[in-house]
Length: 232
Image 1 (cartoon, rainbow, N blue to C red):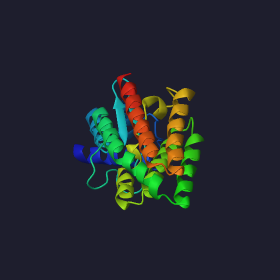
Image 2 (image 1 turned 120 degrees about the horizontal axis):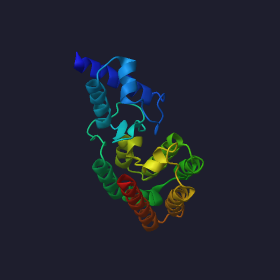
Image 3 (image 1 turned 60 degrees about the vertical axis):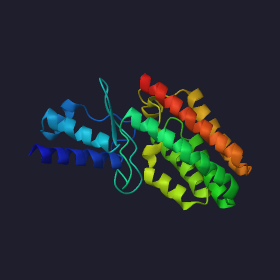
């Protein structure tokens, strides 16, 4: 019975996150609220939240509660053959992986991109610039920027890899995600915009070495920012 209750609660919360009823960065109802709303035990609530954490849909912080993350686009929460990303170590490992993959993808994009693909990268960059203060829009535009670069590489394996990872590959420092409680500083957002712009400009100028260097710097800075945020 408890197992069914856990499954039902996890499924309902999953639907609310995927459908956008609970927005990325938004705090989930408290344990006591869920207990009263669903008529279940504290053990059931914690088991359901643990399940959603393993799927990369929820992040829980001791003493602060649980927060919704951005679900992947289309399909199951975890793509076949991929690992769940739910801990700080997982997210740092993800960024290390992305540095290796996306640095080369950016270099190939500078060499192989078409005018149409360059416009797609620029469009995602402009959407990202306009997303300050809106974490859901920011994460989506961030992902579309990196996905457009992978597509411009001309190698379908890069495109498939980034698409399979989905929006959960975008690891935002807590101030970017939970904007209502810890607003991101304009300086931090401007720095990320500058890094994205540097990648775009190198690709536009058909300079593979500069594109690779700009992408490596951007993702290395993202790793540093996330690690600093996780310590706070």
